[in-house]
Amino acid sequence: MLELCNLTRAYELGGERAGVFGVSLEVPKGCLAVLAGPSGSGKTTLLQLAGLLDVPDEGEVRLEGQAVSALPEKARCDLRLRKLGFVFQAFNLVPVLSALENVMLPLQLQGVAEEEARHRAMRVLDRVGLADRSHHRPDQLSGGQQQRTAIARALAPDPLLVLADEPTASLDHAHGGPFLDLLAELALERGITFLVASHDPAVISRAHRVFRLADGRLVGEDVP
Ligand SMILES: Nc1ncnc2c1ncn2[C@@H]1O[C@H](COP(=O)(O)OP(=O)(O)OP(=O)(O)O)[C@@H](O)[C@H]1O
Ligand SMILES: [Mg+2]
Image 1 (cartoon, helix red, strand yellow):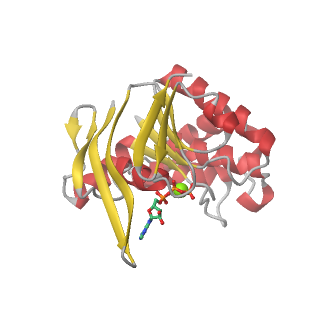
Image 2 (cartoon, protein in one colour):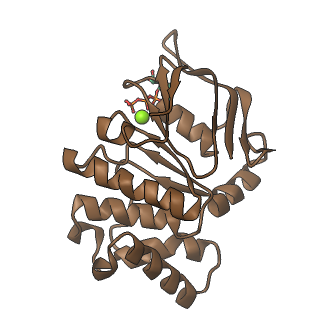
């Protein structure tokens, strides 16, 4: 489903070279994959390449067998909107919108009519257990509920691939496990592929596949 082929993205800053170097990995459809590794090992850099938010210096990103990283910005933007979902550490919910309106947003950006967007957004919120919080604004939701709103927003457009950068980092420890259990259910139910950057042991232990990074290189791959 997702193939990263020999990806290099180097940052030169103050004579120091950092980034990711020659990383190749493959995530099959419906797999819950975790990118693990210490701070600075290149997890976010790799997610940005996989999410077509950044372009590699060398190598290629392939989605469903199609080389996509070298496409023009407009085509990558269309792919992001239609096929990818994102969950960020800080969730990035729009503070003045309700949970429901936040989840409707990507659908409306795709041109889905308001009533249908509302209906689809409600269905996803219901799936993540937030039907009774749909009219709350982010500041009226707990951290775990904001996180589930963020995953609902990522899922609403029916993406093939969801990328999540440290999605449990701003929550207390008890949330990591249940959140990953939810992602594993969604992977199974809908065949969605997940690539999650994390150093949380509760997250890593629930992965179908773990890719270990160190100093920008892939140093191990396990199937727990
Ligand atoms: N825009 C940038 N300019 C220069 N160097 C950068 C830039 N972005 C990242 N780096 C460097 O690239 C390396 C990898 O960074 P990255 O953010 O991918 O790490 P990470 O594994 O996500 O770390 P963390 O767990 O702390 O989020 C680091 O050494 C970082 O300092
Ligand atoms: Mg990071």
